[in-house]
Image (cartoon, rainbow, N blue to C red; front, side, top):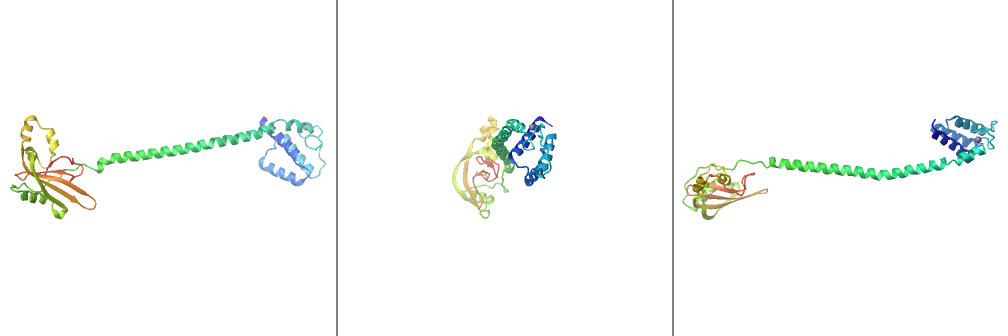
Length: 268
Ligand SMILES: [Zn+2]
């Protein structure tokens, strides 16, 4: 048994003795019942104490000797000397203080812990949001995949008038599919653009031309320019088609996802 435990036990006995009337059987029964639950008084002194108060309560011829030191005890349980020295030992005060300390400590720790849990929760949440944004970011290119440039199903037909050109462009962008095509102007365009393979991007080809190829490519010729527009409930597209005298067509606009919308493509 530890020293501390014995000190506590002795102090408990002194406190009970100073507080209660052991001739009252109800009081003693209550003390013994509590003791049965808490098992505080289990040293030699404690056991002696329990026997003594039971004897007093039941009116048996109780011993007069102090249960602690064996001196004469006026109250039949603990002598005055033991009552004084143990009662003033400071253990009681210490016990009360340590309880208050514990309370203070636990009050002190709790908000800290709560804060830590909240911080961990928030940081986890932020991390999850970042992962979500990153996954969105990674998935964007696959959602908006680069597709082949749209090309015409028709062969070039010689163009002699604005109306001829309009008719040819409308073959690929028919009104019944929701397109509107109208003539805009005549203008000059690079010859080379109309000689590319269907689906090629004019800008990309021009970037790779040698000086000699550039010489031929950047001659200009007269072309007809037509505007194309499309609109339904969920989308709108807009573009330009240029047609040369041979009936070759280049287009620019938002007709295909993932293409350069600011560059001409060979269409027909
Ligand atoms: Zn004593």
